[in-house]
Image (cartoon, rainbow, N blue to C red; front, side):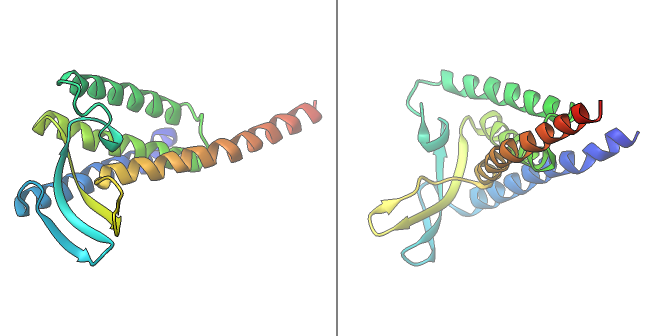
Length: 171
């Protein structure tokens, strides 16, 4: 019972990511026409509505439609692998949070692909002629989660190696 209870915060993080992502997309879809922009911070940040049938940075956006199913399957496989790793204790605490964030973000974008056939993006950062591709809350959770997983991969291995060395020393 305590093992499942200890997984609850990670499950709640994933659910929170999906809920925040979908609420924000619902609000943008209700307020904006396609490609409409609202200047929030002049010269730096706009809200806009764009659609991305591909992956990050519109990778494979013009691939003809098969990519929708590819990214759906990929998201399900990755989420399954990350969830299994959390349950089996393969990550440290930081990695568990990161994996939960990635799961939530991936599910948020999967919901978009299922409902709309593409991902809804609306956060646009830019400076003069430079633009960062528009993204959404789910993408933010995925990026922060990936950072936490990488960070965990350095610190968790050291902790595991130290624990292994200590166990070998006491034998």
